[in-house]
Amino acid sequence: MNYNLLRDTIELIENFEKYKQENGGYSEDSEGFQQFIFDNYKGIANIEPDWEGKENGRNPDSVINTLIVQMNRFAKTYSKAAIHESDFSTQEDFIYLINLKVFGPMIKMELIKRNIHDKPFGMQIINRLIHQKWVRQVDSEDDRRSKVISITDEGLRVLENQMDKIRQASLIVTGDLTRPEKMELIRLLQKLEKFHQPIYDQNIDVADLLVSVAEKYSLSKN
Image (cartoon, rainbow, N blue to C red; front, side, top):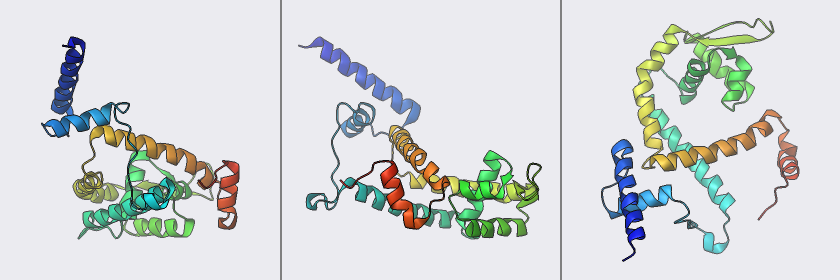
């Protein structure tokens, strides 16, 4: 008998039991154990996934783009449910308030860019929040032409009243992902954000955007 293999297997099972006790997320059977191994020991199982149209030449870039768009639509649906029968008109209202609560006061354009909106759309949201008395604006000390936006006590109150449902919607969006899967997804999405944010900040004309980015980063169709 290979006692080293037996000891390693027992240690792996102990790690599985310890992780379940501390974090949960896995069923207490062979399927849960296999999923734990897959999530935490990538070298053991690094299998390329299948997808619709793969056999006809559909490439990974197309699949990723489609899935991101679909996930955005799913998330918006849950966000609408989270603010149903509340004082909020759109999900952007509470997202702007959350940004101000977490990151503190900021000038209007900083808030708008943080949410990847164009200026006219962002200003509509801010004006709506001002009208509701959920945010206030004052002149910037650094630039009198700019206005600094901050969340009011009333804004904090309406946000807090809805936070349980907002958190519930966020939990539902991540579905049945395990914690290791969530950490890996965060890592990959942050990598994509790090790539795209500087491009967005350049405000390149849409007529030149695709060619400019493809040339600068040597991206070619696979």
